[in-house]
Length: 140
Image (cartoon, rainbow, N blue to C red; front, side, top):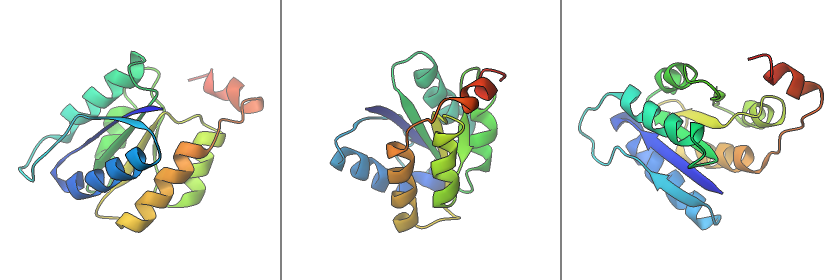
């Protein structure tokens, strides 16, 4: 699967680990930055990631900032984007199974790399259940 990933300076270290994890799992990654610890504006990275999911260049996106809150707020402003802020495994699974989330938001200052890896694994492998959930998504 092709996945686009972006972060601000607060999520750089976590992003780099997740890129390596996804590549190891056989996914094709488009990393749109940031690439340094210099302070940047997270909305710019959220816009880039969401645009690539919207236009079908990438099937899913991952956004990382300090808490994940800012990224999720920006991402959910885009038509067709269903961004889920997940800090544990249950919401990661349910965001895919019931909500067909296409963008995962993570908070690097909230979760550690081990938990982040597990969240990403669950989120990437959980299929959308469809059925009664599809009707609700179509109401967005």
